[in-house]
Length: 174
Image (cartoon, rainbow, N blue to C red):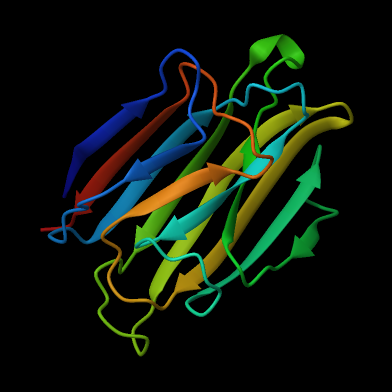
């Protein structure tokens, strides 16, 4: 098994409103993405919208996400057909400018048709809020074919702060 870095993106001074990976290699078994993100506003933890292959319609996206504060025993479930919501982005001016983190795992990301949908798993996202530690996880499908690009865009029209990072790795079994 090999775990190879494909691309690292680090946000520079002034921030950016989106982080995008393009030209994703189609020669691996899975993709893994590690995010360490912080927003520039004073907003508590908020999310990001994830879009695949330049699409923004709901036709090819379906997901289920669970989230809770301080524990995952009393979980709230939500679904939205318009985008995949990546939760756990830390607000910038709150809580000593800490970063929220998230790990995404893209299984079967080279699937070429809706009969064999790409499975997306989100896990490990957390950020501090006024009421406690915010945790989320989710699973979803992208039925628009092989994933060759994806981007995340902040959900509150803000920017990702300087030093926010995203690391894209490919995982090959053989």
